[in-house]
Amino acid sequence: MERLIFDAAAVIAILFAALMVLNRNPVKSVLALVVSFFFLAITYVLLSAPFIAAIQVIVYAGAILVLFLFVLMLLNVQREETPEKEPRPIQRFLGGAAILVFTIGLVEVLSGKGAAPGPPVAALVSGGRIGALARLLFTEYLLPFEALSVLLLAALVGAFVLVERERRA
Image (cartoon, rainbow, N blue to C red; front, top):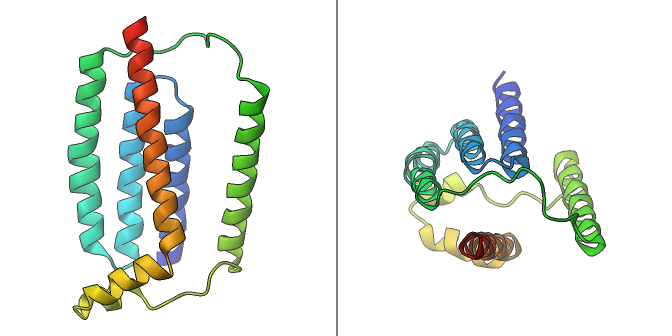
C-alpha cells in the first residue's frame, strides 16, 4: 500500500511539474509548482525523511513560492496570447534531444539499471555523520549535484530574459 501511495504521489508531482512548465499563465504555473512541492513532500515522508518533507512545505511551498507570486504580481507579467514567432529549428532539435535523454534516464532508473544504491542517507544523518554525507554528496553524487546547479543557473538566466523582455515592452 505504501508503494502505491508513493508511486501515485510521484506521478502527480511529475504531472504538476510538467503542467507548471507548459502553462503560459505565470500565476497558474506557480500554483502548479506548489501542488508539485506538496506531493514531493509526501514522497519524502514515505522515504522516512520527515524533516526534508517539512522543509519542502515550509521553505519551498511556503516562503519561496509566496515570494514568486509577490514578484509576479509586482511585475504585472501578462499571459502571452500568441507567441511572437515559431521556435527556431535548433530550439526544436535541442528540446527533442533533451526530452529523449531524460526519458532514457527515467526508464533506466525505473527499471533498476541505474547506479547501485549507496548507503542510505537517513542512516548517515541519524548517526550524526554529516561529514560522511557531505563526502558522499561531493564524490559519488557530484554529477547530479552539478547538474542541479546548472539547472538553477538556467532558471536564473530565464528570469533575467523575462524581465528584460518586460522592460522593453
